[in-house]
Image (cartoon, rainbow, N blue to C red):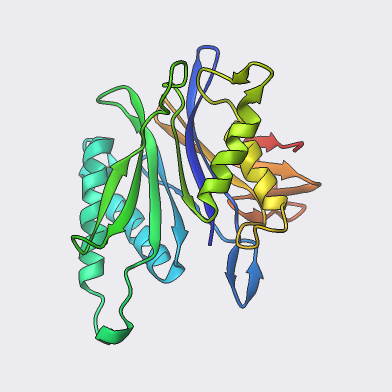
Length: 255
């Protein structure tokens, strides 16, 4: 499956959204080049997935198509909160087209999505988890909330995929100092946790190349080349030696 995270990062006066994931698909072996984050063509958000690809990939592609060919969504006239409702309706409409499944073989779709971006109408970064709710037989959403506790209400993080509990524990370890858990918003602690779990052999469903996009308040969603362990990769795929771009920024990870 996957480990995918979205969080609000704040350093000084700078605030941005980060969406990051591993790149492993596991079925007959491990395939470590899977794109799991798609920047949306309207520029203010990205969608990422975890779970079963037979549901997730068709749904993500049609989500992008639904934005490209609907001017209200593409032009951002439909703000992010309303886009979320539009995408849920697209996904559920697709679900209704799934036919000829024997009753005894039907299982609830094990596909999860993160929609994360910047809402220009409220001037806020927002994250929603889109998931299948068995009680209503439909996909629905739940918003990410800040951590509870004094000094931690600026920490906003949402995680989907495998080993979520372990991921949270590793994030906490990266926040912990001599005086306890660091207060204030996240910096790159979730990224450090993701990198640790990608490298840890005991998390066999998580691995490959880290992929990342950032969303800025300027309504730009920017994919980053990740330079790590001597390899450059973009959205989960290692780059060929001659694949270089002056327009795509690079993040070098030394952990």
